[in-house]
Image (cartoon, rainbow, N blue to C red; front, side, top):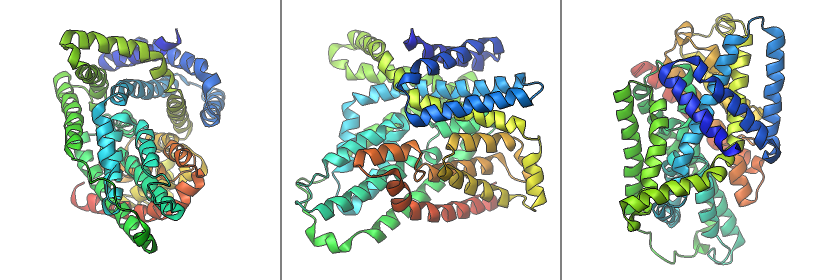
Length: 464
């Protein structure tokens, strides 16, 4: 029965989103709680801690709020929405895990000369991460580790250590820019859940601009910090770089999923995030059917359905940590924001004389800095967004606020020692999260804050 809980959350949440009838959402709330309870024995320390904190905040909320119903429904609704988003995109992840195209892309990205490796790894991590989400860290991380053996480093441990640092920072930084570079991300779902009137097509070009700037910053720092004394000790590639055709095909696949979501958005007159939820499982089924095309369309379709059914227990159970952290953070953020006075943040900004662009810059700094203290980005983002649900009060547009939130989120998850991105990557290469996050990515994030602040200023002046 445990395997049916997340699908119930999905069905319930999507039905509510399409109809607006709240009773349809209640079964999803119950199923989400039961799912987290059933997965509790298999959760790690960090997800358990976040869930316990959410229960603690929930108790305080009931004690302090005389009429908790509306905020409670909003908090659980947001949590169920994020769980649904993860579950829907997990179908694409399942299809990608057995796709020869993804493995071919990985080999193309890894098998590059040192001068091109950072750029291809960073861009590839972003590109593949659009569909695979966190799974891209394992995919490229394992490939990078195999391509960086002591033998392939010519027996030189210093060369191998330098490669490890450069490849791991490229992967983490590239993936971390996905909140800015792709509308198919949880960050976009978080922002749109608070600002449903936000036009994604107005925000997305600004996010892409920030993505390009952070990519260029990463390339510059990688070139600057490259150990030049090791140049003569680096062995030549055993084979030339592979054809880039798989990368182009993968980009076409991602583009097809995105275009299908836009068409559904226009057809049904729903948000882009909801359109993505409707498209993702169908796209995954088509992708899997193509992988079985040697058996013919009919049998390939049946094999795809059978595979999804058999893999469902592992597929949904494997989302337990992400679901626990994201849903607990969303619930806590909503309840904490509801307990604050309605205009508390606006009054605080007015008291210190902040209005307009400086408010957006402060949000950027808070989004980057607070996760370094152990606060999950989803919690920080939800509190800030809910507290600033009327951006005009602060003298900024919804697009500028969304850009500041997404920029800070991208920088935070590339260096916070408690961010899942850093935890997974550091475990793969055998270093501490503090080493990868603060020592290797610290300068990148510090300069990145300045770069994003400049981009926010330019965007506010010219575009918003």
